[in-house]
Length: 457
Image (cartoon, rainbow, N blue to C red; front, side):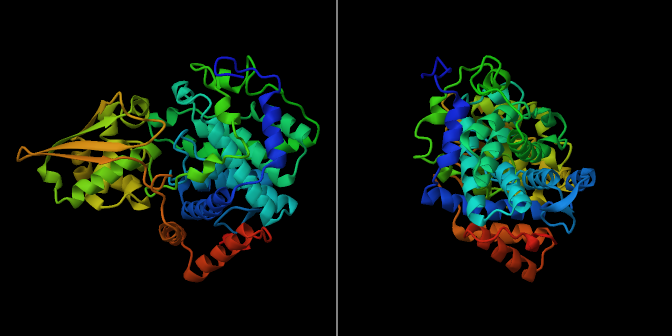
């Protein structure tokens, strides 16, 4: 197998199924997955009162035994995965894999927890499933980097379906042949376009939930005897041909050292509630404000950027200067930088619809522009830099060489704990409720029962 000949003697799905049935996560990968389950449930609870979560919850038709995080109502397995995945991804505050970028936690954690409640799985099975699914999703995103976005698709929405499939299959202990069938089915359930960038509408949020649901569906269909193509990944009409046609897929990036080297060990946890590639630029804006510069001192700010980020985070520039709502602001680097500079923060409160219309923030955002830097390391590394011209004629240059919260500068355990508590308080939990939910998630992470009663506020 080589980069220019993607077809292998053994179908890719079969090689992935072998990994699913035998994977033994490294201690470092297990530690990441422990943080992942806390982060994802906290984010879902934080979003529980939003209009989009309310809409997804209202669309649910099946009552069942599964938990919608932060809600008393119990749902069927598929609806629970949809609600929880949408909520966890909804504020764009969830984990990210820098090489992709993809957001595995909001897909695989809801899928596996729904399967666990439905089938009475142990915490040990839950954590193994999360590790397997997250690893698959990250590695799938490396096969044809940038090509999925270029084709108009959201990578989380495309690679989430097979990732959730692998996660649920691992948690349930499926055999290899059934898992291959499930992967084949998942290829026809993957979907999600990036046209939400045009107006800040809610469909990006739905992608994580829909793919969590898709993984569950694919596994249960396969268990019932339904079939899917064995060449779902590398075939002439397979996923990469359909969703990433501009690049020849390099399946070495997916398969090499699979099961022995865990790329999720470097999974990034976001410090800010906005788009992944924007995070280092937020750090630059905060550093500029901390240096004593005031908004009125600034004539202009120019940011050298990777070409692959422009169409999602910078263009059309006049529209990014004036996002129509708070959600659109999360995918406008000028807005994110401006609100962080003025507020000294970029958390949930900086991306409300009301905050996005503030004339002071918009005035500063309008001074921020970009230039393409051919030497930018995107997507291998997410960095940020700015060049600020001030009224006194001086120029300040600031660089953030990598994403804070990622492999090069991970958030501390204390920072992750503070993020969780802030999210749960934002979602309305009391101190007692927070303590109970922490304890319940800790028991799951330690291999105990998958009891989520404490998440049903």
